[in-house]
Length: 275
Image (cartoon, rainbow, N blue to C red; front, side, top):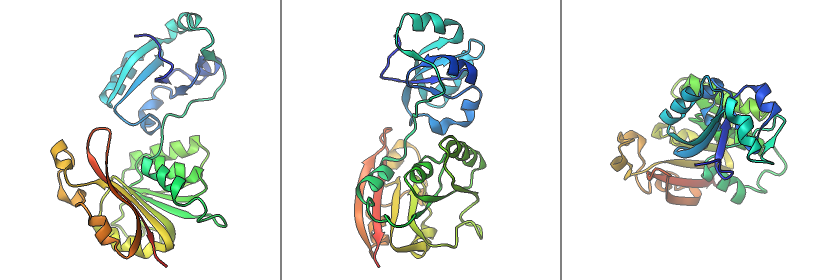
């Protein structure tokens, strides 16, 4: 298989080598920095193409494979010049790196369809509970939101900070457990985001912290996911219709079951607090 311009290409060479010449639409994630920037890769599973230094190309391929990616074409720095000579017009210079990551589709849907004019005269505040690598938090910030991102895992918060830095976004990151005092902000917010995380004990807290006409956006695993092996603990699995019942005093906008790329079912839910 040869180079495919329709597939994502990751270039793990040095900054200077990338700046001098790289494939159009290449994404620069230098090795070994790539290990800490997985949140900038597309969602798994995915096929990738790779340009890497000869000295570490096997390590990079092995790492990507272990993380759930398939490297379908690769070239070393020693082969690069010969390859681009046979592919005229595909190499460029400069530092522009193609963005591969994207937020949760439900967050894109929310911003596109439901809040276009809701906060035209103010900067809305969002809190992302269990923010992980920060894709949703950074995307919200890039679209004009003031964002607080919370996760108890220090490693993913570090990745989230790196992602925000790359996109020049100022976000308040909190590395803490929501069960500890002071972790959740005392201020009222316009949006609560909960993606692939479930803590039923916080439902009433969400209702209280939301401003009138504020929104809650949920997407997490629902009954039936057990057949896929993970998760199995009922504490992390919603019952069908559970969110609509829990937030029955809200205006429900979206309440459906979606399917992830790996087949697992998730409840997608958007609701607005009534004045």
